[in-house]
Amino acid sequence: FDCWRAFRRLCSACAGSRRFREIAMVAIIVNTGMLASEHYGQSQTHTQVLRIGNFVLTAIFTIELLVKVVGLPWKDFIGDGFNKFDSIIVALSLVEIALVESQVISSTGISAFRAFRLLRIFRLAQEWKQLNKLLDAIFDSVESLGYFSL
Image (cartoon, rainbow, N blue to C red):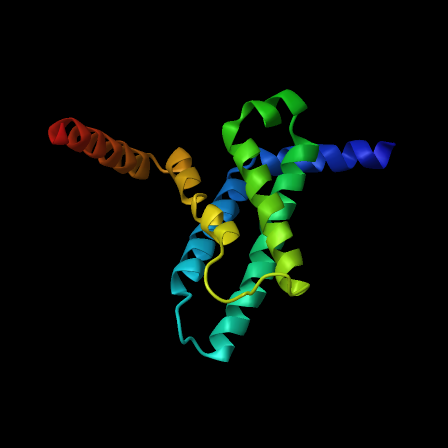
């Protein structure tokens, strides 16, 4: 029981640390870059690098989620919309890996599962104030275009 408490304290310290958030942000950027690099006619080596990268990044995001589940008070975890979003994305990533590895679906091309992972880029806006301002400006512009077209 003392080991569990010590483990929870460790997870809590990790989940609340700036370094932990920075590692998650770097993983999101790498994940986005890998997804963007996938293309028709890519070499077998490139496909293998992306496959291994997918495993590694899914493991990183799964560990991140587990650290938060264990380390944060449940109300805080559930109260954060990005935690709910990440839970769904991690679950979809694990399902995708299971389906690809059991050859139920093809690993070629970007799947709908991977497309959802691209939405993680919006998490960066939470951390990066300048990106947040840029996204706000884009959304305002799109909204203005809607009014203009009427």
